[in-house]
Amino acid sequence: MRPAIKTLGSEGASSAMRVSFEFFPPKTAQMADTLGDTIERLTPLGPEFVSVTYGAGGSTREPTRETLEKVLATGSTPATAHLTCVDATRDEVDEVARDFMALGIRRFVALRGDPASGVGTAYRPHPDGYENAAALVAGLRALGDLDISVAAYPEKHPESPDLAADIDMLKRKVDNGADRAITQFFFENDTFMRYLERVRAAGIDVPIVPGIVPIHSFKAVRNFAARCGASVPDWLAERFDGLEDDPNTHALVASAVAAEQVFNLVERGTHDFHFYTMNRPDLVFAICRLLGIREDTEDDDRLHAA
Ligand code: FAD
Image (cartoon, rainbow, N blue to C red; front, side):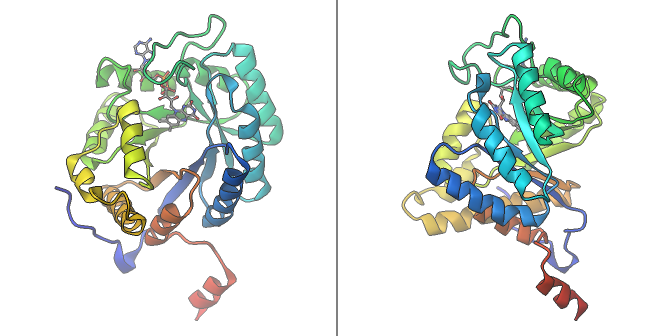
């Protein structure tokens, strides 16, 4: 059973907190509108960076590029491009990286990606491609002075035989030049803390930033979690049980669950959070408010001066 929610209170935490937001490229005009609104709502919160996902084999190259341009157009937020190397030659991947760099991108999340045949099907490197994310990190490093993040898996990647092999792979990525790792989402903070201990014991000293998924739909998150090897504890399922047709209560519970997870991690020494926004602003905006992170407005300045 998780402890009851504990807020940070008046001591706040905003000055030490750093957040980043992840978006995916929209598939329809309506989704593009929603994403536009989300960018407009969340970027004034001053995230460390905003990242945009990238489909396997270059399948979202243009939409990813367009979304990066939208973020860059805010003029204030560092944009980060995810880049996968699955189903592509090295030259093709390098060319996409150079194309994004020409836009002004200096930050990448270097990923292997999943085969077009689907998550969980056997991965085979392209004969002329980067073998895995570690090789991609080295390839990106050779292209310029870049900030490079990689993926980490507190519950291990489904293809890893065990956590030790998984941490070995993370070490290879960091040894090849990764600046930080962003984790797959998780719900048990103890799991993350134990993982962090093992990562540090393995000599990995880059920041490990927890990936937080606000639960817009418990059913969708549970299905996704099953595919990517993240466990969904019973206590969490119980909280959402019976709320499928009650969106208002579902959203309130989701907000409380995410806030509780984040506050508990803050208490345990975490100051950076990466939010999988699912291109929707409300839950993430609310959690940032609770963390004391808010947009700088003239009204605020007047309030503080008073
Ligand atoms: P790697 O680090 O290369 O490998 C993943 C794991 O597989 C390793 O930990 C290792 O233990 C195991 N492994 C790899 N090779 C071997 C081997 N030869 N033998 C034994 N074990 C091996 N996917 C997208 O398509 N687009 C995105 O934009 C995207 N963004 C993501 C962002 C984050 C923060 C995270 C956590 C995931 C993201 N993914 C994305 C999903 C990711 O592409 C998949 O999880 C993919 O299956 C693994 O990619 P990786 O970069 O972690 O791979």
